[in-house]
Length: 160
Image (cartoon, rainbow, N blue to C red; front, side, top):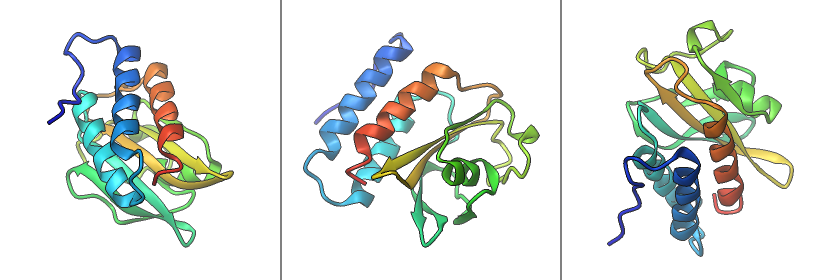
């Protein structure tokens, strides 16, 4: 049995290093992308404090479709270019939103969400999914979170 949680006082860069290592260990050699996304969503939930949602939307037939996650029930389909996830996927650019209520076209799947970080997962130059993190705290995410999740996306891009 492994406990993949970082120490409570672990500096953020070290926590993200440990998160990447745990995701690498759990997904290495496993060909099922859904299983890998499920384990990574669970890791995100355990590693990152102050979240109310952590998981994936998968790119299927030109739209985002709900994938494995931890948190409250979520929107099932998101058109490209709509909401934070849809913009991240359409533009293949990470979206760090300090206050989702000011984001044009924000989709409120959970009314408790106040900030969001969405990172595209890119394989062979195409967005195949997004990692979506929501928090009830405004400005919960910063540049360290952005870099940490972007690095995680690179680790798992060939495994989901």
